[in-house]
Length: 159
Image (cartoon, rainbow, N blue to C red; front, side, top):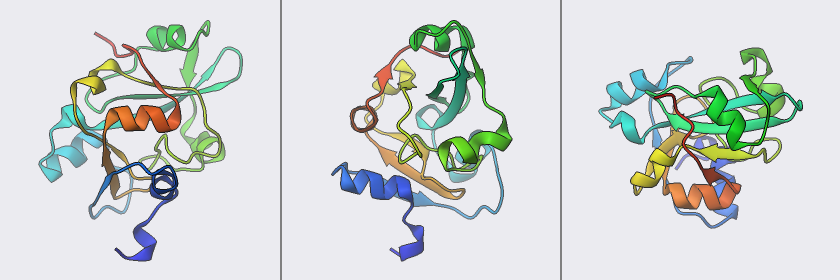
């Protein structure tokens, strides 16, 4: 593997001795996850997007939901014991997480924020998340992911 392919997220997994696979694809700018999955012939139900929110308390929270689904903000707030949460502005992603839009992953962020993974991930042996930069993906066990980032599984998608 070329040394520039390895991201902070991948190094984070290696340091924590978590097994994972890497997938890379050509992409120069943000493309939504559903388009990426369709272009790569991947099952969208196993691809998860990383969403960062700010609670009423001004604390940040991270949520992972399937790429074709929408985060239910009321369920999300309840999952982290907040009155309400709202999505952070795109312009703030890098400042808060260290990543850019389309390359945001829950692994190796600037801080380990409270993280919730939608319960649908428990139905899969492996899920796909961003690899920490546009054009890279990490494939790993959702249980390993939850363990390494201290996440919990809760139903957080809109029905």
